[in-house]
Image 1 (cartoon, rainbow, N blue to C red):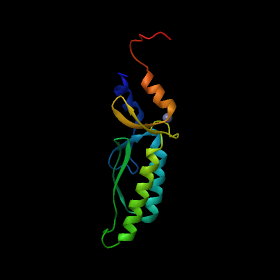
Image 2 (image 1 turned 90 degrees about the vertical axis):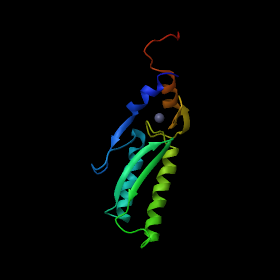
Image 3 (image 1 turned 45 degrees about the vertical axis):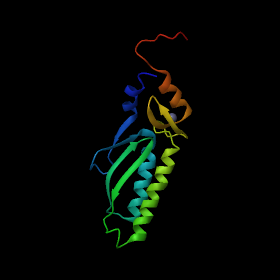
Image 4 (image 1 turned 60 degrees about the vertical axis):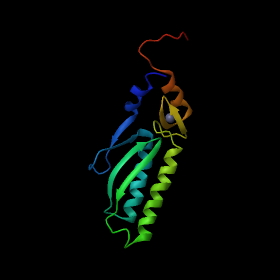
Length: 133
Ligand SMILES: [Zn+2]
């Protein structure tokens, strides 16, 4: 199990949809984030992404609308709803490869992973192989 923590960062890809602030999510989540962004733009073409990240096994998508939320509560809540849908979808999607997955404990990290990625990341590779195959 040791060594998993070092492996994790290689699965994280820098992601900045508008070249604005740097955000990072697992590569498997990039399609979800891009899709979400494409839909949100249709609701509010000038909204701003504050940060997109992976936290406690969940997608976190922080944004600021170009309008004042209390002036257009319905519009704002529809954006919130879309974000929640994407976050729910991400929780069931392997953040490493994008296949169906579930939230697992990976050496202390709570991350969504499919069966294959979970096995790969918990079994190696390690610097000194001590277990015979
Ligand atoms: Zn996977």
